[in-house]
Length: 151
Image (cartoon, rainbow, N blue to C red):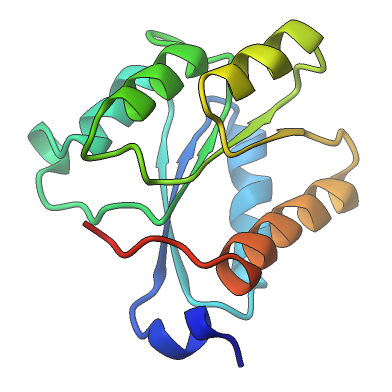
């Protein structure tokens, strides 16, 4: 057993920022099959993501996420703007952000890493591959990596 699973008694808190209902369902399915207890919180646009992270309005009582899965192409405020705001906010900067998007654009990849994304993953089109990717993200971030404590 690793350090993270020994120390973790509360569920893993994951914020999914995704406007595609199909991708939300796939992510929910993949995490449902997880060995690790998790709570998946879903918001459909960048403005809601920032409200969630800053605990504004209806999000006043939400837990701080242990990981953010962020799509780049979002309504209201795109993922690049959200990533920038997260990484410039001293209260949020230590939350790992995984870009999970359909964009294979070299410009998007370079810009995301330039904005300090923790990793960049292109969403597979195939259902089984998508499930495998989500499980691999969870395994890596919550079994292998040592995360900072919740603030």
